[in-house]
Amino acid sequence: MAEATTKKTVVRKKRVVKKAAPTPTKEVTKPTAEPRSKVATEDLSALQLQLEEIDLKRQELERRIQSTRRAELRTFCSDLLKEIKQKGHDADDVIAELTRRRGRSVARTQSTGRHSLKLKVMVYNDDPSLTYVRGVTPDWMRKAMADHNLDHTSASDRRLFRAKYMHEAETADSALQETNETS
Image (cartoon, rainbow, N blue to C red):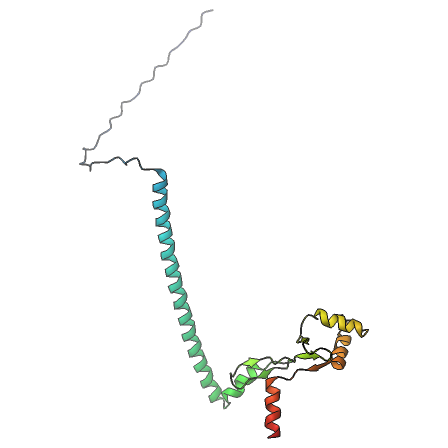
């Protein structure tokens, strides 16, 4: 059996590519063989410089935001004061009403004009160097309560211990008030 082999001939079209006229080019210099670490260092320093510039811009924007907020707050407060006066109220009374704390014993100090908590400092009768203000029951108080057969985890027992075995420390303010009352 004879097989007939047929050859396919492919005719390719010739492409004519027009080349542009050569343009004058600058003389290209090959980069010198610099060590990679030097190139990386230059890139790193450039990046650090950009980061510092961004930080400076960020700080400037934060300052502008703060000054804008202060200006807005001032205008808001002045508008609010005008409204309070138009309604016939005293600004100090309104501010006192807004800042009043309910359910807490808060003493206002006249000298600073700010709120400050005046906490009772309790002194142990048997040893005046041992004091308690508030918060976690100190170890010395736990031991003393155990000596008096009281449970330091019970709030009622802690109140009883403070009432029977402790007294309020005399502060400079209370001593000043007593001298003013006697004179």
